[in-house]
Image 1 (cartoon, rainbow, N blue to C red):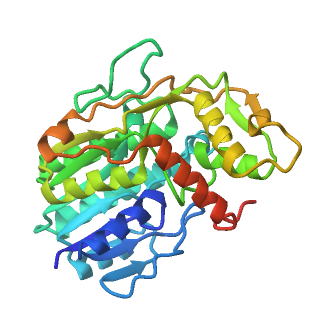
Image 2: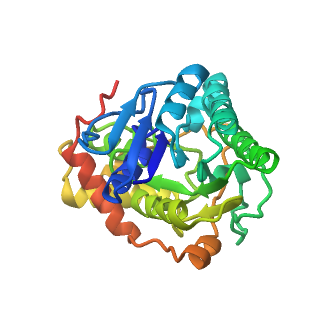
Image 3: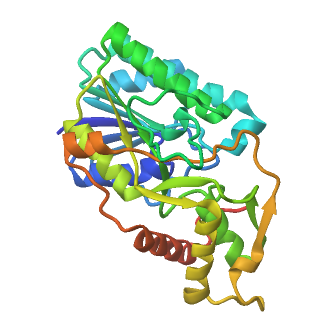
Length: 330
């Protein structure tokens, strides 16, 4: 039985990845320090699953766990990821995204010579912004050009992973994925914000004109791509992963409002939830457009997104309606 250490498994994507790893009969150690956007709910597996609450900036504690568990594989999800928070408090992103990655790499270098693969889960935001009128897509050869403290720290961690791989032969794979969505995502991200705003009759804050375009991928599709990479991905490689669902923030908002109008009729005497839309001052350095070319992973690993966007969006909305108290919202 192969042993996997997964960092940040109590977060959004990590949680869904653990479900797949358990089904695939891996022995999993989940290391998470349980930050504000993390939750241990539903991670109650009785076999082949272990949890340790440790901050990755705790070098000694992390080293002891890695040496004790002796993993075959490591999947590094743990990160501070909310752009707004990175603008307000960038120092925490330096620690969580750069220092933590450095610690893992140093421990692997000195103490885990038999590690088969280190998968560093990153973001397409490291490549910066595409022009609204451009038809270009990000790929594995795109130039790094981060525009926010968040994306800059993720870009830095990508560079550390590649450098440690080239210098010390750490068997890395870097993945850069587009915007994820699905059940259990913390409410600060766009889709949960829209849903929670509607069901609580609060304004839906939309930055600027709302024309910023994102490439959305259902979290289950992303995790299936990562499972392919875990099993078959080539080390010393990079894979860009996209859902191919390009939509502006404002159009996405109207889409969610329309779905909610049908399945959860408004109780506040509004004709539509879309009446709650409120345009606010744009975020500093707000990227215009993301689009991701997934040709490499499609050709090499025979992966393609399975889930239709509208169906996944509807099931996500229904999950939040059925789990209104899952997150304690302040």
